[in-house]
Image 1 (spheres, rainbow, N blue to C red):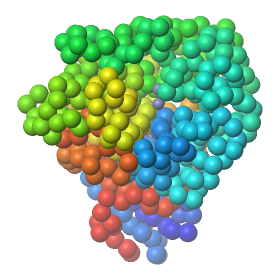
Image 2 (cartoon, protein in one colour; image 1 turned 90 degrees about the vertical axis):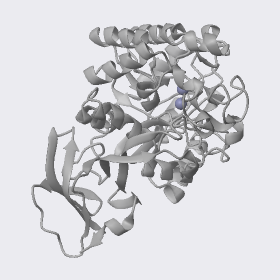
Image 3 (cartoon, protein in one colour; image 1 turned 135 degrees about the vertical axis):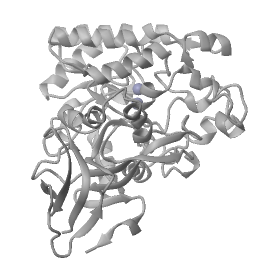
Length: 450
Ligand SMILES: [Zn+2]
Ligand SMILES: [Zn+2]
């Protein structure tokens, strides 16, 4: 197998508390050591990483690969290529496919696709309820056996409290979390964006923060009662953060994730970028709103976004997850109310997150931790999310300062739906290594054979 020597990079490995300029050796698909200087073994591929950051491969515990059933939005092949381009070496696929991943056969189908066509490691998440209809529990034992790393009806909340109670109980028998998309339907109604001054000004139906917080509070109470393990997907409000903080202080088994967009954008993004030209206003050109900024949960007010940043910095938020939700352009080329909810995130995640490091709001090592070691811990894996000797050789190399203008037409993802289209981001993935093999390289001529 291939031997790869990565030279002179700034190695950041939160699992070992490492942040130093060093060389990293990979052989036979595993990490073989970090030293100040490693002589190049004969036949090794040498990657010159001076000025670059070298980290464990990023792990995304929440993305939508859309296959089977919605191949016009994304496939396992295109979604995992987008992941590799974004520096992700492992992605967890949500089950809201068609058919829903609520049986072993659908899980096997996705895993086989990943094996034959995937560019990164894919871990499936099984449905909580049959068809994700919210009425009858799926065969969780079968799904756990098939390799599911958690259960979720994401896209929809588990609205029935008794079903949630049962689900938390069963899942804890397998040591797996229930991952809930917290949204109380009676409060959310058909909210198209955050309820606030922007929704008032645009005349759009808003969803209030309490739609999220009431279900978060319920889930925490149920997890406490049945001693279950609840993971809150894509949290977005300051109120949710306080609920999680208090629950953790009480020792309740709750974890949560935040997306790059809820850390960096507010509901004002729905208005498009003031001062931009027509191309800066999403798929409808110079319309009054940008359907690319329509996402669920919605982009919130500035105070909520700032609370997410603080929660990431102080550790209440466990993991950064993309909630990569690719859609076909047609599904965004319509009125705001009708537009599909979701953002194609994988290829802009690092660039947008780096703005938090560059501004000093969140230390780079914290961002790297929440993309690598922390999600590995969530998954209970010690062989990924780390650069320890013997770990699987999943490595991400990025240029922290490279500026680039987002052109979503150039995404390898089928989903071009990005509110970052036209934005300048600083920070770009250079090379992604999965299982000791190069899954993505921005420019192969920069690498020298030795
Ligand atoms: Zn969701
Ligand atoms: Zn999702």
